[in-house]
Image 1 (cartoon, rainbow, N blue to C red):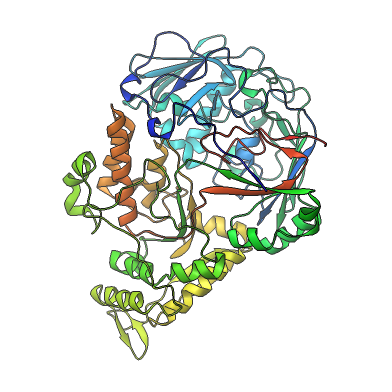
Image 2: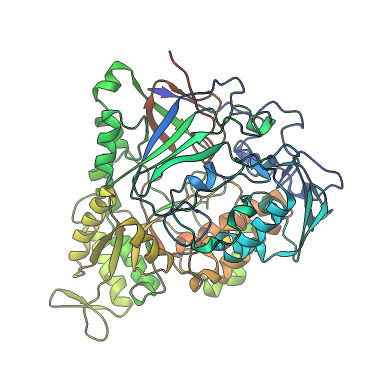
Length: 605
């Protein structure tokens, strides 16, 4: 098994924010931009530090997904799209270096310029940039893309568009965005929007497009073949315009990226063992240790690679929808956390080999610290003391069971919490104040056998409290519709978080998401403290304040008891054919967006 490690740099995670006081802009065009301080790489850098500029071209990667799809447009709320298309099939003005907390370098844009206080940002397009059909990229394409995405595109784009006071062409290849409020992150966020070809959508309804419209983009990969719900194949464009751009050297090495879709995880794993797939991420450490012993592993044709990272754990588990009466009371949510017997579930599912997520930013310098809030963290929280839930200021940790199946102590505590919230057990049934049985619906997407197994164990614990939840398993299209409209009481939830939290936090936890459909705020939270802390993160003028504000936000989120956390994956486990290679040097984000398959290559031995 191949294990790889980070090459230690003087700029490590402990100094991720550098000096926030250096965030003011410059009057001259630059090759890149950092959220805090200056970009690490010089203008003439050869390649990203985790890319191999000498990597050969060729080969293919075939990965599996559980579920299906009915759209090829990842930029609108309608339909279910292979999530990879958003990143593989489109390019933006700037590209992200995953070896720095938040730094961008020119991709479609050859330069970026900002005002002294980042009140505006201007990009100059590369003259050589073209779409896959050979037509040149124009400022008109850029401006149309921003307006279209910001008005009728996915809600993830609407927030940034609302902060743009004006958008204007300032030269043959330049465009300027002026902002209507102070937000230093906006100059970077604007550089990361996907760029579409305006002419492709003339006379067509962009917001209603689906499986019948193959995108024309500037990206190195184009959709070559697909079958709805079955597979998507992307081929490397031999005429890709950006092969010699330093940001792209060592990237887009594979000739084909193919995604196969399966009804469940078991069928997908069997397909990998049979050779239909040639790369597979494994999230279950017990399965990794005990079931990856098939002939291709024994012969060395398939290798197991362990890849560490230094990014936050994010949150993975089962979210409770506070819009619904079932979970509007925090004491009920706390009862669910006590009833969820993680220690027993972890032993059953992974042999207790997988650590639990302890907070949203755990596994990183941004995570909340044990015990009462102190110093600057406490100062940020105290103005909202009356709105905070128990534990935010004084310290909060997740309930820990005794590891036995019956979990007697925590079940007693869960029943006590339900009683505090006005519920009673009548003839063995948990009963609402109005005399009706207390129950709720858990909605799951088809194909996730692991989630179904976890919920089965959770349900057994709930039965000891007189609670019989309804479990509904639906196909991916129905699941997308119901989660978009928050039509669930509880469901599986996963949100990755970065070392540079910013405006996306409002999409995840902001009050607007309580009613606006399609946000990531599945729990329906609206916290004045969280709103203020996100603003503090965005406008911090010192490294210490940035970290303190994030740690304070982590306390608000975790003590809110919105999600029942399960495992964290502080390393990635990838099994792949021996011909698929990756560089020894890893980005601080590890196996993250823009690593596989972007910098992997195929090499025959």
